[in-house]
Image 1: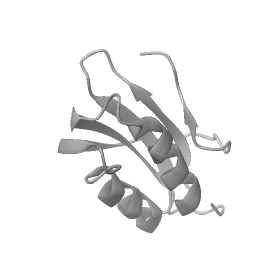
Image 2 (image 1 turned 90 degrees about the vertical axis):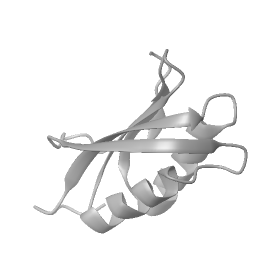
Image 3 (image 1 turned 120 degrees about the vertical axis):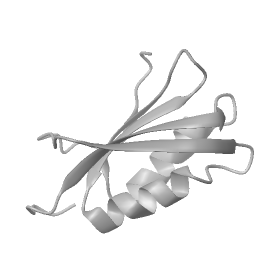
Image 4 (image 1 turned 180 degrees about the vertical axis):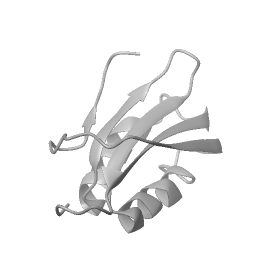
Length: 98
């Protein structure tokens, strides 16, 4: 990701059959391929939460992928909210807290 004033950050909550199907790890793989920073974690309610930061086109690619997920997932809904950007520049990762 390059320095730009066009960087955005979103929080996405993905519902459906999204835990126990490798969703987090495939999300990390996809995010790193696209070039966004952020994290993914399971939530206690059975959903998966994602925060992703990057150029609008990268974020659009990420959201499109989240709406499908890995082969074993059955995504019912993706709720996306734009949130303030962070100075984080590390690799996209799995968070194990809930």
